[in-house]
Amino acid sequence: MHSRLLIFIFSSLSTIAAGQISLLKDISPISEPTSTGIDPKNIVSLNNRLYFVGNSKYGRELYISDGTPTGTRIVKDIFPGHESSNPRNLTVAGNLVYFLATDGVGDFKLWRTDGTEPGTFMVLAIENVNNTSSFIGNLTSGGDKLYFSVYPPNFNRYKHLWVTDGTIDGTYVIKELAVGNNNLESEPLDLITLQNVSYLTLYTEANGGELWRTDGTVSGTSIVKDISPGSGSGCLGSLSNCNGLIYFTGYSVANGAEVWRTDGTEAGTVMVADVVPGPNSSSPSQYIQIGSDVFIYSIFEGIWKTNGTSAGTTLVKKMTIYERIVELNGAAYFVTIKSTSLTSFQCELWRSDGTPEGTTFLNRLSSGQYVRWSSFGINGPLKHNGYLYFTAPESNLPDVSNRYQIWRTDGTAVGLEKITTLRDNSTIGTVLNQTYLTKNDNRIYFNMANGTSGSELWYTIGDPGDQHMVLDWQSILLWPETSLS
Image (cartoon, rainbow, N blue to C red; front, side, top):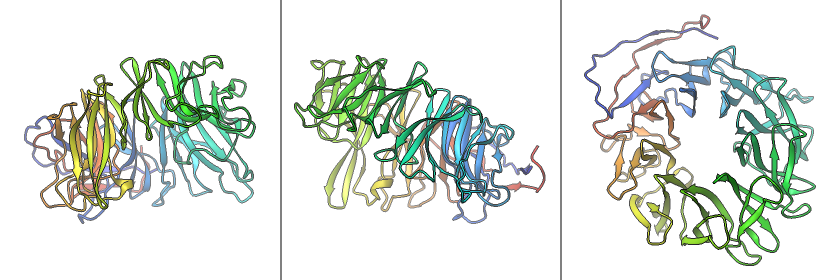
């Protein structure tokens, strides 16, 4: 580890008005506007602290911040010197943050941190004969435990489900799984935790993909119900906690892929409704509780809602949405994409109260723009003080693939407001298009490039207005080669 001496040149400050956007700290000071800055990514929040991956003279390492310049520091120089440990997949479970990182020996290993250097250490690395780590992924929070997958390098046919409580002794394998038909390494497991029991979709050779339950022990891990008997898959995922029950997409030969729910018992695992009667499928992909109802989205059948019974499952509106449904103040909000030509489309914000007549268009968010599909869209959204916050492109500029701003809506047609501000005819002052908003201590944090400091860590209290940089910390920042106290 290294210590640092921070010498800041302060500019005179006028009274800080509410609603200002503030640069938290320029950790990687630069002399050229094109430099990248600290480029904070994978920002998560735990116990009023932010954890993120940043770039500095130490390479790309893990940082922590309490929201002040002096409270922003490197957690541990995992790969000592100028090399990068490249932390990724930051995941909060209990009072710890878990992540994958490399220390220069072997591949990525599982680490944990409590925000201190002594409390930051490697939890698991399985070595093979070539001294390289196994393939670790699917980091997923399950209450105070972390579940993850391990692909042993000498076992090409199987992977294993592991669990950890953050200690070496509390890290062990609980189930052997089939490799196929599963999550990507970077994605979390499809897992929901209720009353200290986690439910998830697991794939085994004997049962295919089915719903399982676990308390984090080998003996406490069991299949809930073999919906599609034998090696066929009866649980297709999309698990969601709604009204104290778990809704998911189940499959049977007789009914296809439809809406199911469970109370955690075999007898209590039942199909809610056969939306498309017979063996054809509605293939729901999302369930969300709004009020006492459960909203269901199917790319083929549109938006439905249910009270948990077949008779109480009704169509809201048959339409295709682009971004997932979110809840705000008892209503559903979602985004649709409307093609206007082969090279252009419109992105629209809609609201629904669960009735056909109450499902209405609110705002057009963008129109006629050339963007990469994978980088377009609304990241988030985040609920804060009665608003939904999200990022969307600046609609009045061409080639906007990197020119995103933060917006908010109160759920009305006139309630759409832009929070961050882009300078006219300029590429600077933009929220980067891969930004995911993170809430911490009544602030919203994000990474933004302003053309002077590169991509740095910023925050807003959430109000629009005369928004500008409050503190510009790109003065003098020294990192002497001595120990970090």
